[in-house]
Image (cartoon, rainbow, N blue to C red; front, side, top):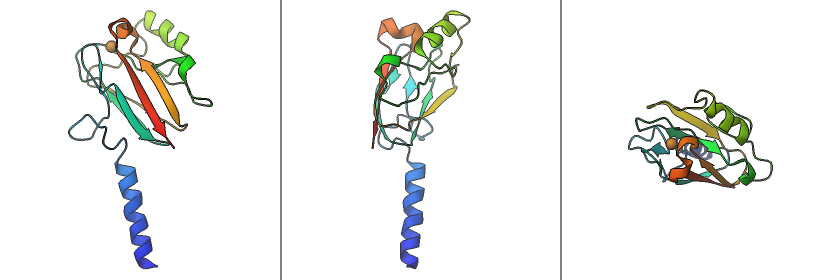
Length: 138
Ligand SMILES: [Cu+2]
């Protein structure tokens, strides 16, 4: 019985400390997805339901993390830096004073509670191909 409790504790610790395990781009594990001048790095990450993805602007440019609203899994919450509730609101916000900008060195986080594939982009660099994908597994 006691051994079971210890193992359960270890398991919980490992799960809690390994968000996006194996896909982290940072050497210290502080973030999962970095940003170059015109790309997310890596462009694709896979996490488990309930995990939080951390994006960090590791470049000197202004970027956003903005979900494609028509590509969300059923029941999934819309997400975008700036806290916008829709893709159109996020685009409008960016056009009006760069709302939703993630400053250089700053983070944006989102917890994924619904499994599926999420596509997202950076508003100012979408045409340069700055897009990404998060796969959330059960
Ligand atoms: Cu960008």
